[in-house]
Image (tube, rainbow, N blue to C red; front, side):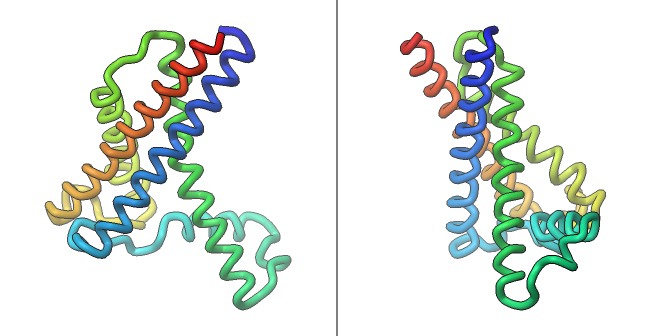
Length: 171
C-alpha cells in the first residue's frame, strides 16, 4: 500500500469513526429523553475522568483559569476525548481492513461495535471504577448500550466503505 493510499485510508477511517460517534451521540441524546432506563449509570463521566487525570499528570491545574472558563475548557476536553475515543476504532478498522473488498457493513460494523462495547464495559470502565461490571448492570442498560454501539459500528463500516469506494473510483 502506497503512502498516499495509506494516508487516505486512515483519513477515511477517522471520518468513518467520527460519523459513527455522531450516530451514537444522537442515539444517546434521544434515549436520555425517551428511554432513560437504557443509559448505563456511571459513577463519573469517563471524559471528565480522563481530563482530570491529564491535568494531574501535567502542570495544567496551575495554568488553567478558575471558574466558568476552566469548566468550559474541561467540557471541551471531555468532549474531545469522547470524539477521539470514537475515531480510534475507525482508524484501527481502516488499518486492519487493508485493501480487501468491501465486506458487509452490517457484519463488520456489528463486530466493530461489539468490540468497542466489550473493551469499554467489560474492560477499562469497570477497572477504573467508572461503571459497574457488565454482569451487574440491569438488562435494559446492557441492551441499550449494545444497540448504540452496534449502530456506531455499522455507521463506521458503512461510511468507511462509501469513502473507500469514492476513493477507488477517483484513482
